[in-house]
Image (cartoon, rainbow, N blue to C red; front, side, top):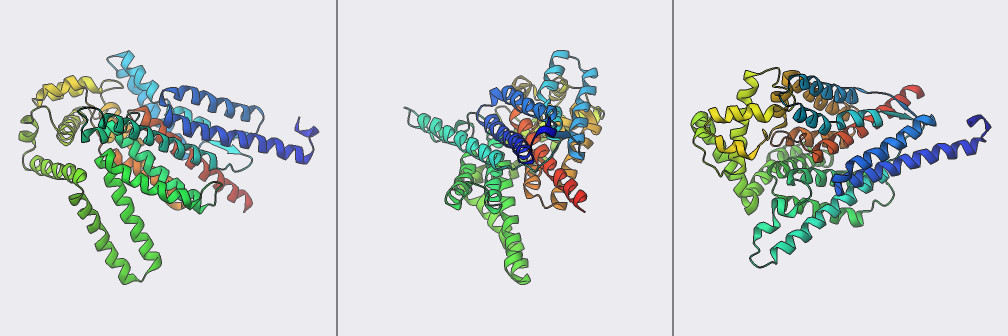
Length: 426
């Protein structure tokens, strides 16, 4: 068919698909944040566009290391299904993890032309901002009702669509891509709205009260300041900043009221646990703080993993953790179905040390390629995953699975495309 097209018509055809693909990515980035229940519809839309590209020979499939590892990660859960005690639960877990198959297949592409992330950036930033504003409106409505309290403006009350930790991750990445879009001189990216949005995103972290989200924000800001100091000032100023900037973060953790309480409790409980782990766990009485629950669930998960290093099987985590909680004199926690609150422990318990090794490999290679090709967005997204997984089972909810799989596969695919073009050029 292309043999009968003039050169300029052929270019227009290729550009037409590229434009369609870019807009579809933008719709997906917008939709999965704002309308998470409609994620299957957005998947169908994205898959359909990619299939059209294959039919028209505008795109070709090319797997890379990160997409291959994602498929291997899903395979671990598939193998774990053979050891499940409840096939329905096992299949449900596999359904939740389908993003580890879909994204590597539909985003591991070789396009004839490099596509722009302009629409994807705009869609994601806009949806994150709308979700945040929606949360503020809901929180204010609660606050001004008779008997409304300060709690209406904090944590899950101000983040009704996504868990606060996930929304913190969305906001931080939105800030990063807004700045990156400005650096790359993308359309619509102006400092007139980027600066207020960055301020909004940083302040909103304080209302979400996700300790992992706030800590990641502080660590990232301190690193950014140190890097900026290294580029702008002398070595003496740079080395001084390494000592001073972390101190600012520590002062902030101990002076901001909402954050100080969480940080103080966390350090206190950690000290108590180190002094006598068995006594700390067995003597906790429900209701507990979030930090106490985490320590108990981490202990139960660790004991379960040590007893089953090859994993308990896909969908069996709750069953085995319940048995361990009985041993730890924490029967009350069984009725609340708490997960390990740590993705590394969650993965280790469910699919064993090999699955954990694959997860660490994803983190390692994403960081490796991020630094090698200076793709700071990939470094940020994988840094966010690595850090937040210490405090939450980030890959157990669609809010985390879709978010991280989408951006990791998308950014790594663009790196691989640029790498191949440079090789061919040379």
